[in-house]
Image 1 (cartoon, rainbow, N blue to C red):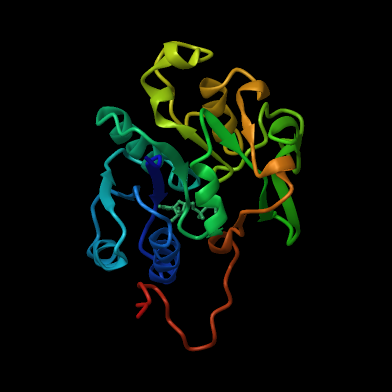
Image 2 (cartoon, rainbow, N blue to C red):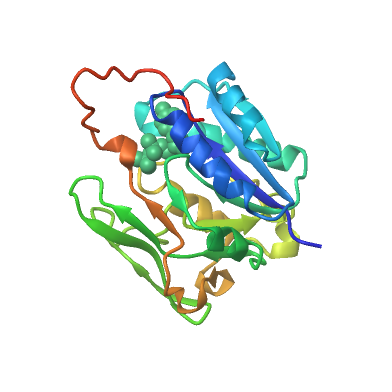
Length: 252
Ligand code: UDP
């Protein structure tokens, strides 16, 4: 049987939300089942999001995160943790992947997720937030063996693993079965968000794997890009004069 894919997406209402969620939903719809899309909002389940999800034809769960967000920098962190709690609590068995709503994903990526046994990682192409520069973040590989990292920007050498939030996926059973996986620590996994920006991914991953030898790099030689993290929301989009876009723009 095919492995279940558990795709976690934090989202919030803004002008391009409908466009983003529809685009992601349409990719997920092309992925052979079983696939579960866990979409998480802050504070309450909005009718806008519920409406979009109903139309996508993808198996989904619409969750709400009630933790008080302390900073705008949190950007979906607590929502991802709500999904992790849900996956652990219900023992959802599958490959967990954090897919932000505004990123761009190829079908190949979702195919590749099913080959992951413990922890998979791959390079993600992104626009650097400060400069308008395209960079890579993620592993350098020899076949499927991770032998190094593309590093960049401020956290250059300080991070243990240079992985984007949408550049890795893992077997959900690692969350509740430390023995089977000989996890670095048998204490419960501390979730994302307790550390400063840029270190959330590595701090989380350091609890899932001991080192690169427990990682599977893909595709072979990590030679192809399967998703793009463009930080579109972070860039001030110049809307045409006279447009007022505070609410969701509908997508047919
Ligand atoms: N997000 C959210 N609430 C926020 C900010 C972000 O739910 O207040 C979600 C957003 O929809 C996306 C993810 O968190 O799925 C990452 O956000 P963003 O794209 O703004 O971060 P960046 O791409 O700059 O890392």
